[in-house]
Amino acid sequence: MPLHQIIFAGVMLAACIYAIARGGAPERLTAYGFLLAFVLTNMVQKGPGDAYHSVERMIALVDAGLLGAVLFVALVSCRFWGMAMACLMIVDVLGHFAKLLLAQELFSPVYYALVALVSYPMIALLAIGTWRHRRRLRRYGVDYSWVWQLPPAYRLGWIAVPHTAGDERS
Image 1 (spheres, one colour):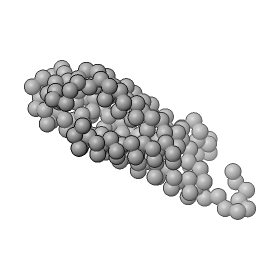
Image 2 (image 1 turned 45 degrees about the vertical axis):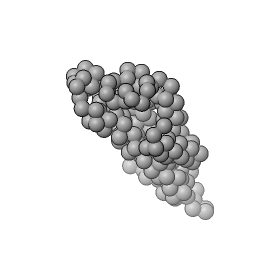
Image 3 (image 1 turned 30 degrees about the vertical axis):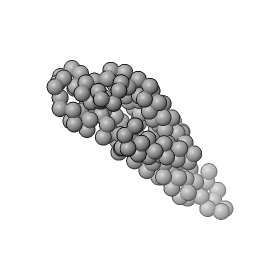
């Protein structure tokens, strides 16, 4: 396994463990999706000599499945990072389809940039999203994960304020 793949696997594993241990439900769900996609990708990929010269359809399917999970998190969670991550996943999946359908002769480094390099900012988004979740919990005492958990007053302009001793709001 090349050094850059070992570094990527280590950074991704660290971010996923952090998200599972300290994140809210959206962060944990996304981390589990990343880990599953990583395992499945390593199971279905061909030899390293063929990497990015042609589309590996099974890897494209794994990425499409991860896109579905990330889109779910982006649409129903109360997190901003989900939308940014969904956009990056769309670039990844469209990169596979562009090479497959439109440009079989697409230059390999361009294909690599479209489908592999977007993984690094996604890992950073997951780690930063987990850190911000912990920060909101410390600051406000609550951090709603899903849109259906938001209190009705939130839609009328209510904002979360830190809980203090003797505070009768709940």
